[in-house]
Length: 452
Figure 1 (tube, one colour):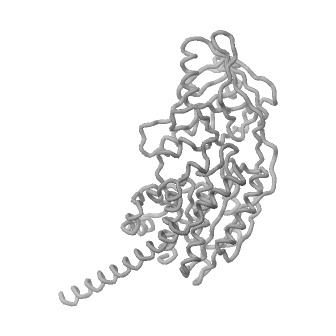
Figure 2 (cartoon, helix red, strand yellow):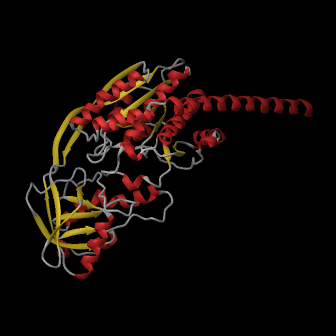
Figure 3 (cartoon, helix red, strand yellow):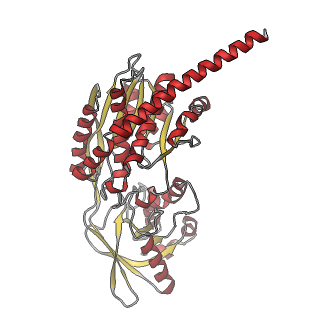
């Protein structure tokens, strides 16, 4: 009996080793192909330099739709189509922020209106600035001290967290909510310290929200250096600010997400890989999220180029309107549900094109443990972190439908230096880092397709 059992264990071990070796060889084929022949870096250059930033509703975004559809065809997708989605249209227009110095002179401050903010209708709105360092401090202020004032929310990005997304999530409430909090107590508008890990004066824009039951007042953001200077001024004397802004919402329009797929050889169950095609209207949207778009297209191209016979349909989705509405992801989830499509898995790349360091897994424990069991296959590619339990906002509707979801986790140390700024340009992206991210997503989808 012991001999039989020992023989069985030996055969099992040999089979497991053989399987590991086969997958390891395939991982190497994938990375070698992408690092040598991948087109993602050149495609990112084309997207950012010929089209540029791609705010939802803009002419540039509509150009990027046609661009993405052609790139998916070039990658060898069996089918490419545009998915209709109604998106909000927000326009920045002209804007300026000035503060009055102790000598009575006006000084221009570098700023950006927050996305979806209403403006001043092109008129000057001015008032005395009051500063708070936290939401808790603001909550304690009586309304009479806020009424008619401009509230400066000076909450710094926490530099102590190694995982910078923790600091970002912590500070993001100041961007999202402070306009309505200011208006609720009668304030004229909000100034928000940027959600930035950098020690510079670059303002970071981003989405904000209004409470439907509260009047809408503007919200603007300033860079870290300006925030520090304003704090120093306020400690010495009263400071007046003046805002003039033409920004505002301009209704909705019909637009599209872009989808391409290679058909499954075994069944039509869907594995999604994606990013969002839109960006903010500053910079070039290179890391956020041109990187995720070209990486997703690279996955399809690599399966086709290497002749990998995928069991399930692998679908690349270039989502519309992630930045100021997530309407593309919501429409995709709604359509998938209406069509009774079976989705096995979805992964998004929306954290920059830096070196891949992990994969965050939002799924049940058996599924997580199975993927974590592949860690030794990923280690040669610098990928070791499988502890995260979140995934991208575009695939959140799929997760709510019970689909296991994930997100590529690149090195996070530089991302929030340039996130949502004029600094997010093609020159900030490294070719090898970008293509390694594409390789890791292709490797993961290869394993999911083979084992699920």
